[in-house]
Length: 91
Image (cartoon, rainbow, N blue to C red; front, side, top):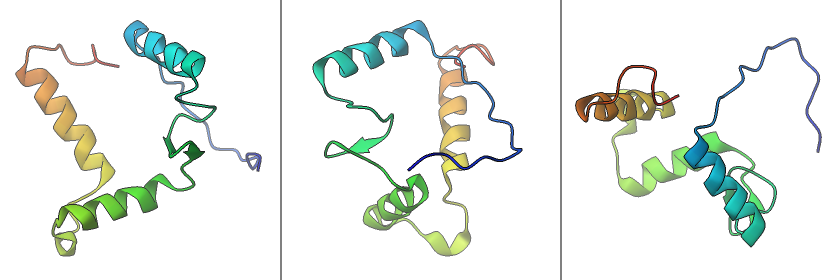
């Protein structure tokens, strides 16, 4: 299935050289066969559904509405800064 044409702009995401090296190795070894997010060798159809399943399996309280992928982004940024990374250096 191809992408639908839209007017939404997709922001380029710069890859750190270490991550790019891993992605190339995974591709060469057949670990990641063609999609960035895979499960059992097949592309993940919906990251949102997968995240919801993970939240449910972890037993997190979803009634507050505070468990979102965006929360993970902020948590990761906080941990990086706590360990000395400069803001924006992890992008």
